Length: 167
Ligand SMILES: [Zn+2]
Image: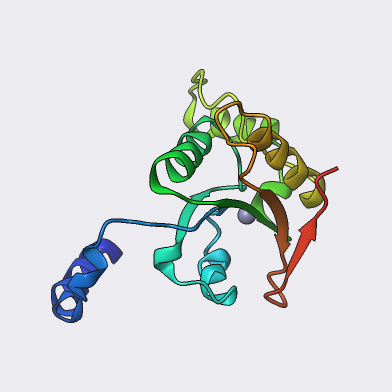
């Protein structure tokens, strides 16, 4: 059985203990952009936050791209999030190869050279990269000035967050 089939079978049983109160309309207090890396999955609880208080926006590499900005705008302008966190982490998979290396590998493996993705957003310095993502959010004209945008590095060894200065 595939993992997905196993998950569906488990859902059929586990959903019987689902709390219908969780269907209430979302009212997040904070929007968080973080990596899709499974080691970041517990970060909300490691900050003592409730799932309902957080709009969790995840992609590989903690990238503030067009789609992440779209989510941040809905979260802050429609749903009511008051603050934005960018949570990058050490030992991110996007620091171990360059975008050009990956594209070349995929071209070789598949024999195809598609026009997209244009970039994989790889990086070498997590702090510098976090600063860049913060700037991308801060500079968007539709992100309200009174919404704080703060960046952090999550240490996958200790579970601790360290703030990254904006400049
Ligand atoms: Zn990562």
